[in-house]
Length: 275
Ligand SMILES: [Zn+2]
Image (cartoon, rainbow, N blue to C red):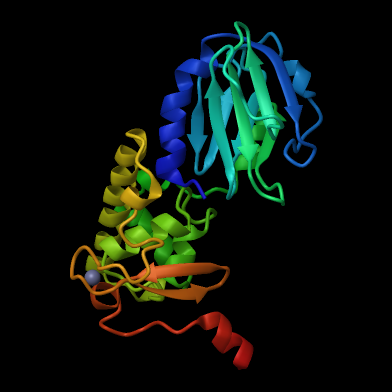
């Protein structure tokens, strides 16, 4: 799933192409992708976007007259693509915008269950839609992070992914951040000491910045991640093979040497079923 580094790289890349010309044709949109019907999508036609903003993992395209906001959430498998006039696009996009002059922005989703979403909202409704999100991960400081960690005893991997607590981190970057911070994915948020909180804050900042830099230069997953999806490959710090464990709906990747004092984490889904 695209997280802060991927979405922020997209935001920077899309600003110019989506604001260069007004929208000539809004749609088509897959029935499962378009989440709103009022205002109708056609209300975008003739309007120009002011640029692209991002909140957590969502992109926002406000119109320059201040009346509408198009909100896009790619979820797990949605992808955005810009097409120049005359470029061949996907036959059945989940959502498409055509600009005056013929360039396009298309959203595709190569999955049986369509989960990516597009909302056309007033600025007030957009604000409401985003109100539940926690502070931006890349901007969080140590006191704010400490307050979030101590407000509720949660396992770190789960807490980092919770968009209501901190916005922008998902399972891949939670793996990368915890590895960089040398913290166990299962560590309880309320049990971190001050030095560990500071290490976690520093790792959130440096890992998201590293990810953004790589994604802006077009790096793929293999080059971008150091632990995520790297089962059995040597840890780049200590060369211990990266381990994995299933937790909630996710697979966590971690280094047993760097992060858990040599302990192998138990699959908590299984132990819950057996209890
Ligand atoms: Zn290691």
